[in-house]
Amino acid sequence: MDINGIYREVGLRVEKRRRMLKITQEELANLIGLTRTSITNIESGKQRCTLDTLYRIATSLRVSLIELLPDEEIVTTGFRIEPLYEVCWNEVLKVRERSGRR
Image 1: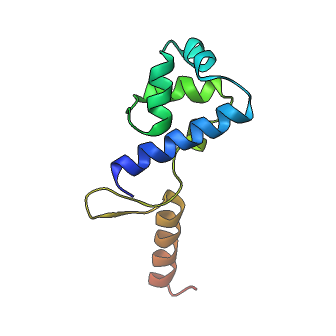
Image 2: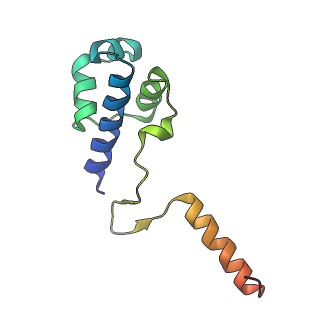
């Protein structure tokens, strides 16, 4: 997923949660100090928001910040970025292998 795909996915998650709570774009905008147009653009992935803005959105929508982020592996520069648990588990397996345990 490229960087634009990440922002589109975040926007979709914001919109889905906002609609689930039956909050309008205008209401969300007022809660976090943005304009309705900014919320529209964030939800469509056209506007990149800062971490503190995303945090305010998550708090206003009563979800954790992580719930708004894509949970797929992210590829931005051709390198594979693995989820943290996968990296940790691979390290555990390497240590076990070196010590002769399985």
